[in-house]
Length: 466
Image 1 (cartoon, rainbow, N blue to C red):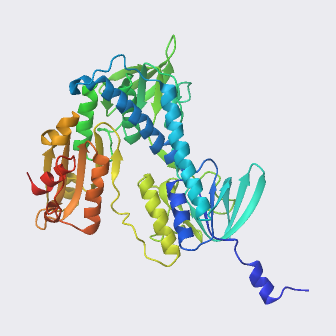
Image 2: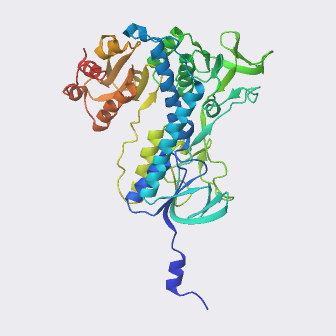
Image 3: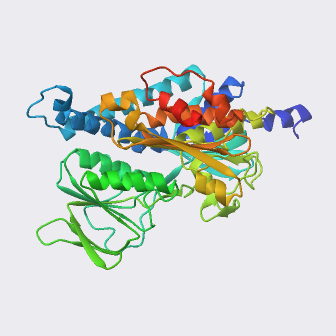
């Protein structure tokens, strides 16, 4: 006997309103937004909640950088009248502290998921089409159904095809973040954000560091003046920086360690105990789709439209897996926006103006256009730059070379962007990000009275043109 119409309707009901694959910042923020909007949501994660950012990226790196900066400050404390003798560091204790931070924040994600009634499922999710996701766990397989599927699987480090890249002692950021043994020398292949942060970390701990970057400048995707200022500062601190250089091979050194052979203006070599390879990241899509499902992609990244929809009906994607700006806060904003669009609501966050932050010392941050970018776009723009050497808080803190520069339309004064290299730059940049989203002018920003003495009062000097 066949099913009644009511029974057929019941059989087509989905188990969830939304299934999110990947519990990094983009995934868990999307799941929490969905729960707040009344969607029954499942969040699938093959490893630990928090994704790369919490477990193998932003948070652990900054925890170690914080410890290294404390160590540097203690060694230089005599300038402030503090006598600290025989200052040393314990890398194992630093790693323990890092792990404590990660565990605390991971527990916060798990607790929030429980409170919002988001079902957190540990396993590997595979999109099988027709609103179906197969989850492979240690206990077996489970098929889930949902009206919508959101992919937030992030990215993973890339190892370039350099001879010797698989030798012992050649590591990615994932492995170096777990290192507990001090070593004397480090070669960093790649002068992007990850490379310069690790260079800053280990230089502060007394390691001899060499950075080799293929492009003409460090931080190739950022403003050239920021890159040049950072290069000068790194060299001042004893880091060897080689830009416009191609690594030809990595080989073992007699007696231990490694030798990198590279070509700049001539053939050069750099010796080190460890070699860090950080030349970029690749969207993570391996094994994500069952046979026969081929979403439209370009060089490994999933292509999406303005609604975050892939070419597979009912399947959305956000964050690193779609390429673009690979930043945790960008993925989180995209995740929340995607869910709101699914719910028939307008996107709430401006993802066209995403700040970039680098946690060197001093910090670097930027948002919007640089003067060069404005010129390339055909905009009649002007810029103002204030040096931090006259900023009271910077002088008190013994801050290094730094500045804040604002770029704006010459005729209207409308803010176009800002570039910062100074103490607390990663916090101050939010003021410029908000101003850009609000369409403010430098004259509007100049109306705000900022407290004295603070690092942020240099913003007033920059927008007023002092």
